[in-house]
Image 1 (cartoon, rainbow, N blue to C red):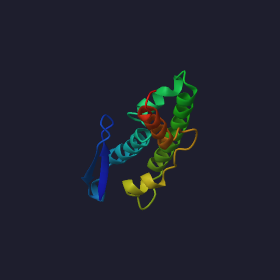
Image 2: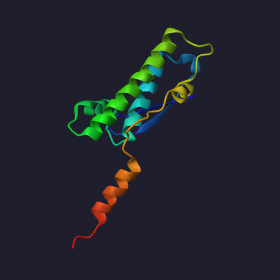
Image 3: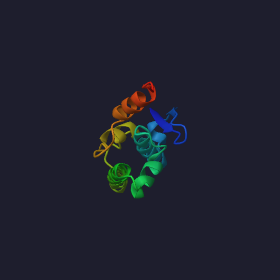
Image 4: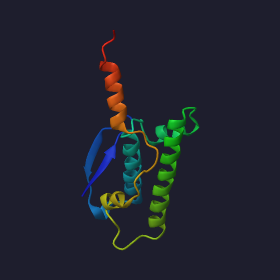
Length: 127
């Protein structure tokens, strides 16, 4: 079974081969944290921590996005801690656990809109 590791600094994903019998709670914790960081990186933040740090931003869009992200992150960890407290039989693989987690929802600025707007502003010739 393959588990992924993501560098929060660079966003580089590394796949690691793991025997399901040798997986520990820490392997699951790392997989969940990587999922959280990848979700934030997809929204142009450096990591989940970076995204959450915008909760006190004076920019209302960034503050709202951080609030939604934090609520989602809390929901994810509550679910994971619930599974640790009462593990299902059979225990899911890290991939199955990640697939079962809730999706982030809310006022998330569209990456496509950001890229389109930034591209048009950067490529528009000045008169």
